Length: 294
Ligand SMILES: CC(C)(C)c1ccc(C(=O)Nc2cc(-c3ccccc3)nn2-c2ccccc2)cc1
Image (cartoon, rainbow, N blue to C red; front, side, top):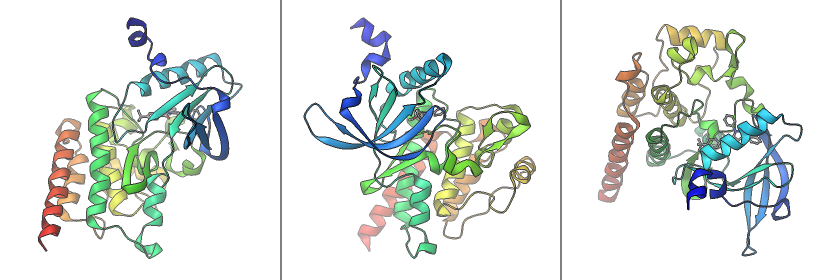
């Protein structure tokens, strides 16, 4: 029917606050706070959810931005993109309700599964994580969605090593050290950004591809901060002078070569997300065959 297509807000279930139970606070987003919670569905079953609740004194502009964000997200459906289950718009606080990803964000997941924690992830698991993020980004770029903040902290992990792309907004308090105010503009995740984004504020799918290369580096480095030990200002100079991140210890050379291609100075020379996905998929399937052989 016409008006459903015209108004994406009608595409997602409108819930009421009675359906939603708030538990602990998970963090801060650009629009307000993020909570863990529980949703009672019409069938009566309860499920864990992530609730992004708009701050109550939000300006009209922020409310419009919030509704715009919902419209943008409600159109995007993919197995590697976080799923919005519904919205509460009939009473404040206005909320976005997302599926809850039980293993938290990918940065935390990598840290808690790193050799320094006497854990580790197999090469196949590292590939599986990388491939899912690439396939999610392939979908977003095909829908002309530029993420602008692709990083392990903005990817979520659930059971069975399922990884989905999300976005908490820039002012997330627990990762404030990942953001830097460049020339007194907004807070920018400079360690994940190519020169053209840092210098000219140019954000495109090609700058998302650069960030994906940095996410690959985070995955194979088990979550240490890119350019750790360097200040944000030093990082800007390193990126401008083409001092690339080094090959992580356990990273296969073919994967590092892919990272370096994502960090091509000329954005048009970087691989596309479909190139990246098909190369990761080939290595992943190859691994499966190889493992089934021995
Ligand atoms: C899947 C994609 C990448 C399309 C996605 C998924 C989730 C979100 C999202 O959840 N956005 C989002 C919610 C809140 C939010 C936080 C706290 C309370 C109430 C809402 N902020 N943002 C935000 C704001 C500015 C820039 C970036 C993200 C976006 C894209």
